[in-house]
Amino acid sequence: MRAMLAAALGVLAMNVEAQAPPGETPHSELRADIIASSGRTAYQAGGGVQLPAGYYARVGVIGAVGSNYSGGVFEKSARVDVVGRFLFDPFRQQRWGISAGAGVSLQARDGDRIRPLLLAVIDVEGPQASSRMSPAFQVGLGGGVRVGAALRWGSRTAR
Image 1 (spheres, rainbow, N blue to C red):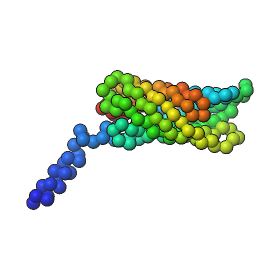
Image 2 (cartoon, helix red, strand yellow):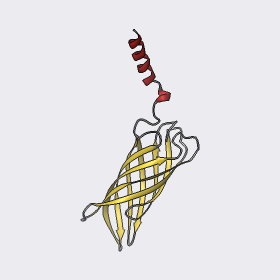
Image 3 (cartoon, rainbow, N blue to C red):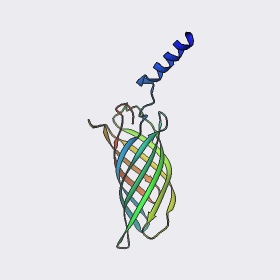
Image 4 (spheres, rainbow, N blue to C red):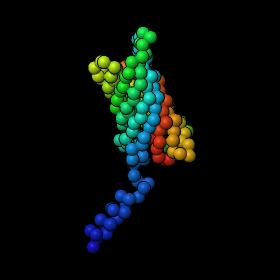
């Protein structure tokens, strides 16, 4: 009888939402980026998903396509980024939250091989609108200097 009661209490405790990690479901993201390196500038738009990895960490998987401009010529380009970010305000206690991260970017240009590159970023994520959408801005290094803007959908209580 005690074992059954203990098991029932354990099951009930697992279902209490307050004990669940914030943002335990993946959140989608739309973004636009400019990546400038010596002699080449990439303009790309894409989307992805932010996966929770505990209270203070998120892993983002982003895919983007666009074009590179080099020497007066535009060429097709694409990339896939995998970025782990540490959130300094994961519970939305402030209107604006900062995160820092690192990862890998796989970049491809028209007629060229895929290039794996290291990636380092700093994000600033803003307050949520009624649609649970937040603006985010990113600067970083990876294939050149990166500047980006994103719209992220997420939880009311977690970034």
